Image (cartoon, rainbow, N blue to C red; front, side):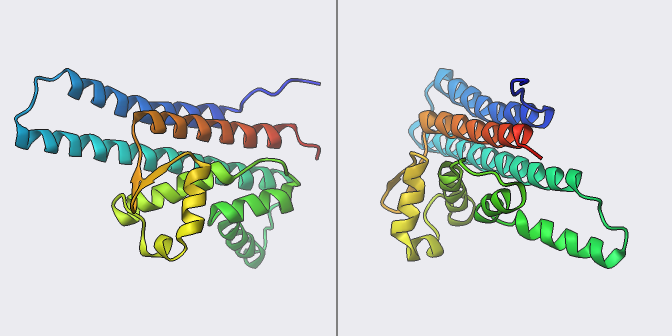
Length: 198
């Protein structure tokens, strides 16, 4: 049996995730080595670092989600003869969009369409929850997340992301953990697809 080797798409996704973390860490080191800012400017500098960290989380989650969605659809399409009739092609396009519309849907369709089980999606769903807080709640839990707070807290805890009140707390260490967990997840998906029996 040939051992698993990451696909080019997986390697590219890992590289993009590492670049997102490296970009933030470089900005953090640059800020730390800069001469101390006056008191009023210090908060602006910290705010910029927070924005860069938030942007890195959004980018990491998006890269992971895009990889998993593309890997699912590419594998299914490789196994089927795409219909030539326009209506059937439209139905497939709709099914493909639906299958990749959420993490839960991706997880379910990896099981249903490719028979892939045994991969935990809890970590990436927690990262997606943090991403949604950052993107839609400006770093705080959204109304929807507050409505189901216990579930939201569990999802964040699955990704080792802490809350301070309603605010998502991400520092350089947790950003590294997010990147490491997302890379581990997409490589697990890539391996499961690459080594499955057809």
